[in-house]
Image: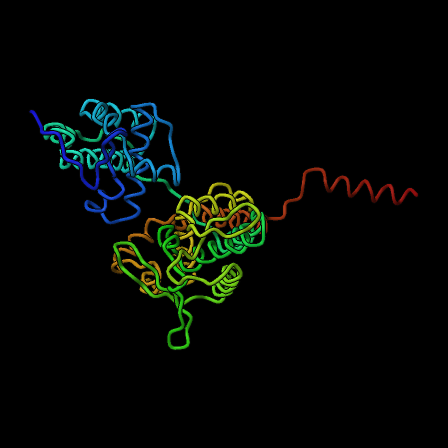
Length: 371
């Protein structure tokens, strides 16, 4: 099938430079979730690395790549045969079914956007969409559920990994907000100084949640103290813009940048703190999971937990809590029963005179009479 050469538009760049496609601004028309955007960017970056030999990127470099995807490379590598083989290879590497489905969705969505822009034939988009994910192990990463003591160690370690005072204050705020308000990385990165206010005498924080749902959360004392200390650090460098990023990157030497801390940067803070605290690998979402689990174990009602997690309804929260590693103490209880029975049996043993005991007693008596 022939196709006309596409015209220049806001999403394609042509001219002297190599033609490129701006996925960063095209993708929100398909899905509005920042989490999905981040996942799609990761898989498309992996596709370019595996099929075109391009180096893998992270953080700002990945965002820059998504803003200018090389169209020539994409047109040469996007095919149903390559996609099917790639998904099979991911299954062989041990990726879960949900991860493989996500990888497929990322590549198929990119293909469809390129078809709409006129850079690929309709038949390419149709054949790519017909590729099905191979069978793979169901499920997702089990994740971690930290106890309250481990959470305290993590927050303390976050300050120790800071190289200067401002970095220590920022890390403390990041971890306090995640470990009390159960904020997602995207929610944390999108916070602005103007989101904090006093309502009816209560310090509150406005959070831009998943699915473009806003929520107003009461700020606990530990997070409030960390927030005030960080605000003073920002004010020390000049007037604080209410619409600027609340959490910032750092220059060497401790000066606070005007650029916001990215979701990748938040991941890095959590990872450094968890390693410093001796907790091994802890992902940012593990902290959200840990908050929900700790509240559930403390007897907090599910509706209160649901409001904190900013779920659409309580049923979503109930499913979320059901996926947490629940206590399964049957083996421990059985061990206690066996130990109790063993102790009771030893206490109730009948008194038995050992063979030869009476003879020995008589011999002692004889020996006593002889002396």
